[in-house]
Length: 162
Ligand SMILES: CC(C)(COP(=O)(O)OP(=O)(O)OC[C@H]1O[C@@H](n2cnc3c(N)ncnc32)[C@H](O)[C@@H]1OP(=O)(O)O)[C@@H](O)C(=O)NCCC(=O)NCCS
Image (tube, rainbow, N blue to C red):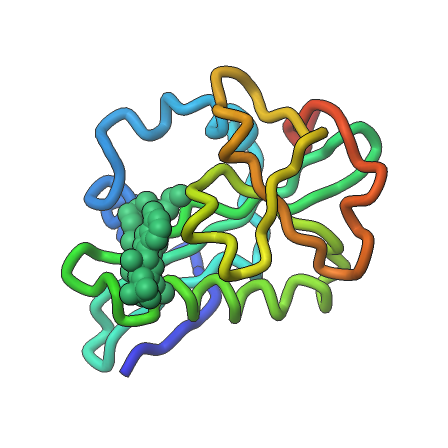
């Protein structure tokens, strides 16, 4: 049994350690991380999954970004500890957090990831949205949280604070 709760400051370093375990070394050198520099994650949407004993099993974070004058959520990183993968924790983290996003006035979400995994959650290729190079454009995926939310949204993804 896993319990999903919004991430708090007390979770921070444990989540960092989980991401270090789940991703290749140097993950923070990825260009998508430049969109997160000096910008706090979205409070209330970033979540942790813990087991009955309180051991961290998975985590998801979100950042705000801009595309032109439009706001969007950047989903990620999302990761599940290697010993807990395939139990539906990734699905639960993504679906439960995204269920909350429209209540917080967010209308669209994007990510950089594997389409074969994210298609099942309604993410599709964003042809007109450009992540900082050298991101593979085939991995830039988005989901509208209200119908049509990505219509007409195009251009470079920028840091929220720029
Ligand atoms: C991707 C990840 C978050 C999924 O978490 P999870 O809890 O294992 O996912 P779920 O249990 O909800 O779903 C498992 C299903 O997703 C599939 N899946 C996992 N990663 C996948 C990928 N990269 N591409 C396609 N399918 C994938 C599994 O094969 C499994 O399929 P099945 O349901 O047909 O058996 C987890 O594998 C992970 O942390 N990976 C390392 C970090 C990472 O790559 N994060 C995502 C960045 S894009």
